[in-house]
Image (cartoon, rainbow, N blue to C red; front, side, top):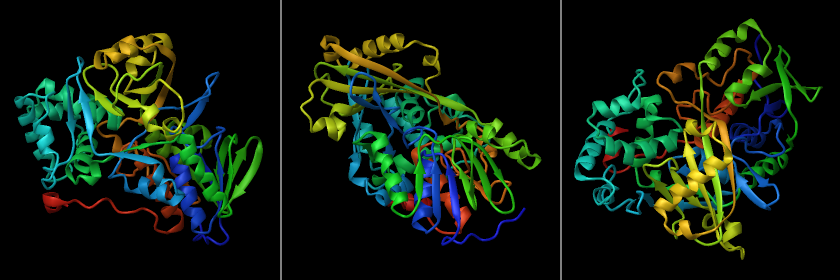
Length: 465
């Protein structure tokens, strides 16, 4: 089965899935002149980066806190495309806190990359001299080039490079488990190294942290307006039951009704692909690939107190179950501009396998107790409401060897293309990876150019480009 070169002035494209991958593909192709029709089974857009109103509270909560870094060039371009780039709050500093309150701040200084954060790193009070020297040696091993995925896990790599357990617990683990949503002994060396090279080493700009200042569904819901303003259609509460392709086009079954399009992009999570596609022999290799991918959970814990428990807007919490604190009452523009009192915090636990089977009450009790170890004011504050959101299949696991099972954007059917952070983007399962996949699928379909370049290295890192 072969497909003719698509003509953007006549060709229709159906996109299955309204997460970031589908929205990125849809917005790019709509801008290029294709007739885009997007189908999302949920009542809102954003996929795993979405939000909803908590029943009985009038509070809008994200399913999990999502952050980006300055190195996320395609995600930032996507925000500019939609006109929402001003709804990201940027931070140059990250605070690390130990139980008991001892803290240190990592921030860029005047030295050229890769040494721009060295002064604040050397001043850290949460690491001792032995830790700092060991970390510095390991970081220098990552500078020359990105290592290949040879099957080794990153914990093994750290031990092989002489990292003390305290350095692992207080530096490598909090950064990487949050970034890759996986335990150190289950993540590939390549993706762990990529996190540090792209964000810590390349430039100060690359390591800036961005946090959305509006609920995620509000942020990404603007993509529907963008697509429809360019002649497309976006359908929510529109579950696609099956997808078939032939020499003339693609047929979707949407809520029992057939929909035809010239081309289609399947932009669903990897574990949802199999149920949409028929048991055709030519799809066997794709099915085998996807069956070798696994997922990892994230848990978001939302707590509302009757008073402020910390002046910080965000912090990394060390050596406890809870890993990050985001003070949404200071970050969200809607709350900063309102007269609401108290304090609304979201705590994040990445790779939260130990919490999947725990009850809501158990998780909240644990979180409040641990939070008081970092911020004593939380012990005196009254918890007015709380909720827990478990995203059991939040991301695909960047396990050693997993790249071999990530498919390209081109499927065995020439008229069907694949998008999703699980495709072969060269990035882990992040918002940046999802947008790259959407743009990549749009490029494969149209032969257009939508992906933007990575941030260039600066300082001495330019020698290793």
